[in-house]
Length: 372
Image (cartoon, rainbow, N blue to C red; front, side, top):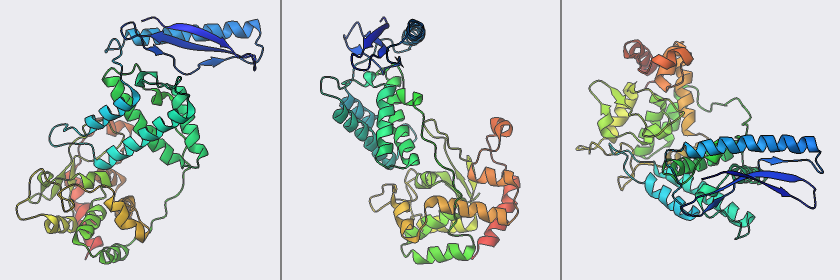
């Protein structure tokens, strides 16, 4: 498979474009990624030579990348087939009953659908990239900019880019693409803002619990506020992970890569234990979820919907726990261990466990502070 540099002159703007092009000798599919280099109008000889040199360097890098790919030749897959294949992959069992959360699947497919819809409206049918291997950085960047023009928030666009990146990473692993173009597209900068905590005291917390009549809602909120775990972890808790005798919760490692850290073993405060006992049936299934709907399926967006009328999010309960430990003057290392925050580059590199002996005294103090 040979990569070539192609040039194209625009008769209107007098600009010359340099781009890479190659084809699969087995399938005959032609790949042409985004334009890499565009000259100024009526470029000089020096500028043209500089652009040729830069394009040649890009060609050499792409040639080496293709020859070094572990998958060899691409397995052609149309864009819509690739979306369906990715959906089937997310629904499979990754072992130990681990599956991608339904909310994660829905958000991923929604982002992919939005991207495919954008391509269909932007490109004429003859130019539409039919195969996932033809999706390039230029396509993703233009889609990102179109979302920004629609008024979407930066963090929403970044989440959609992350979902699209997961799809492209899957295609790369299974030999449908030579690269993940989303990794080459910069994410939008999210403006930092100071979080306003709606609940700060135990009275605020128990007042919120009292407003939730459903035992499932009350139990879920108490577990979130008494453990400080992320909502995704709480939704995925299974009965076999809970040890009521030692009052600990074991969190298995995620089946995929993640930027979020979680403590492997979480000490459970008295309030969390009482909520867990109230939600545990007489004969629970070991692989069953602690927080499940009437059909036994894990909760998805329920936690956000339950808290939204009260002006809260599940992450506010995580902030509430951190505020409580800071009120008790707990060391920062204890707080980091409890909530799974990165403890620093040095200690984080070799410390993968939580120091339960040092943590339990502070958990006892938090129990007394939280009440009732």
